Length: 345
Ligand SMILES: NC(=O)c1ccc[n+]([C@@H]2O[C@H](COP(=O)([O-])OP(=O)(O)OC[C@H]3O[C@@H](n4cnc5c(N)ncnc54)[C@H](O)[C@@H]3O)[C@@H](O)[C@H]2O)c1
Image (cartoon, rainbow, N blue to C red):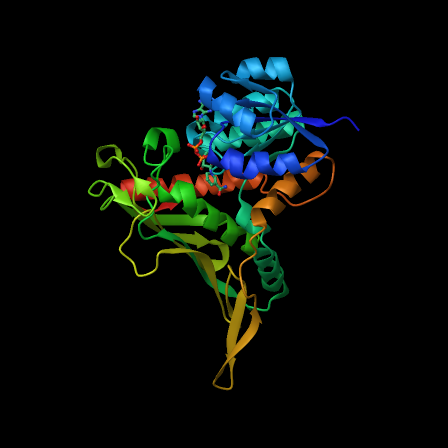
């Protein structure tokens, strides 16, 4: 079988650690090109990862290489442009999270994928953890009963990224909500089966990132810290259910970091990572399920699902439609926080 040709746009840390390292393992694939604005960085990325061609211009790459599959791993602002270019060129696309900067962009990306009959997936890898798969089944089976409240946490105590563009609002679209909060929002909605979102209310803060300049994740310029450092949201779901979100790059809390979702049902409760289901019976506390540690292979499983889908298998993906829903939610949370009022969807 002729190998599928893969191109990676944006040769940074996630492109190397996750995308290139996975593609190199699949014998059906050949990484044919990498694109990055700096020729030096593109060349060294290509050399380190055994890629024969590097480009500084994506349009040139599409014409010369004619790839089958594209990974978009750039700062968020450029996701839309490159995903659209790749879909128009007839490629299947795996785009890093978040899908885009705005809901309008995410909608157009979804429409373009449908129109061109191509796979469009987003790298929301937490949903590929065994824990999330197990919990989704248990919730669907009714083990938790009526899940009336959920708390999604994507919190870092001292984790303003000291690399990349994560404090630049123009390039990223926001701070912890659009960067790490989206992961837990996707995981929570996936377990619940993507119920309709009715209304959101949020409040965000910029209390630490503009004052400090270093933390556990490196150094940053407080004068260029343009994003929220924490955001708290209430998301009202159909059926009167509540999804609460708390997310931060910097927050004076006890733990170093929390990436988890708690589900509160009238029969039992659960945490997601690792999967743990608990209840009480006759006054005693009961554990119904307990995974010892969260599945460490979720990134690899997410990558595998995307490639399997490109090769024609019928597998689950974080697809264009769900990406659009997540982006709408992110946009509504930011709008609510900016306006100081609830936003209906
Ligand atoms: N799925 C995850 O868990 C996860 C983790 C980290 C990052 N990400 C996402 O991956 C993306 C990149 O993050 P990163 O941590 O790798 O950042 P990074 O700064 O390490 O890499 C970004 C790369 O994009 C390149 N780039 C910048 N502008 C470009 C342009 N116009 N065209 C082409 N390339 C361009 C940069 O040169 C750099 O090599 C972001 O969207 C981020 O949200 C996802």
